[in-house]
Image: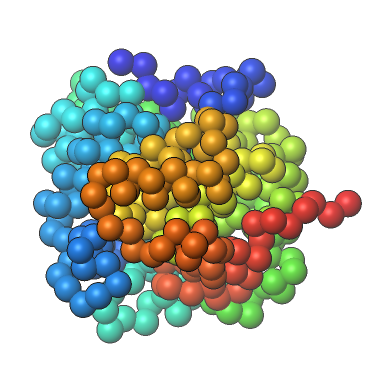
Length: 361
């Protein structure tokens, strides 16, 4: 089956994109970051003490979102991808593309009692490309791609010459390996994970310039399909979107926040040039993940605005007999949802402060 991702990326890069050509991904790779807390709490325990979901329940939500068919990508850990893509063949007859997290830098090692997120980010990879593609250390030619043949690679720059050189060297080695194995990737560029490394007013410039500079030396065979970055506001998204049609900009979702946080973020980023969005915790921590994804898809396809989508979502929850976490009035508020894995916004301003800002000349 033709994957919606491939068709949309082709049209975007060829300059013939339609209004619905927006790549939407469900990021279910949090087990590479949070350990036991990755699956989140079930809706009945939201905001209260209670058990975390099991990994089996987490994977069941991946199956449900994939069968719904409204996202273009489901991002998983290599272990989840092995079970769902290789063993179960979940994606064979689906328009959804499976992807796996291809590296796990130390700034996403969010474990209880740990302090890694407050230390300088170091490059690291648990899974190899072969293991993602076929579930073992070495793939025979015919086995490549029986698993996921798309990965997320993350870079975190901290304005530190030696640390950032290591980040670039690790990404270069990954790209060479990926090109040799026919493995595609999309590129995540996080904001610095340490405070005080970049003037907050210059942060959007810092990230955009890093993206343009680092990819200037990368030929087409090694380039990412699209980008995943923090939304820094209209000015910086427009700048990135106008720079090079080969660069397809996308945003990350960050922490949960209100329903309006998620819907407004998607609508505003798309308005100013984003062509992709990856929401993990915002989907996973929703009262009803499938209804939440349905609204994200409708916003991405320009069928509905974010305010109307919040009201429609609450109406659908009521019809399904699901109790919302917040009253509608509270869920319509913009909040300071964190955009970092570590649960804070170390250098960039809160998401809510960026959503309605107009581009400056």
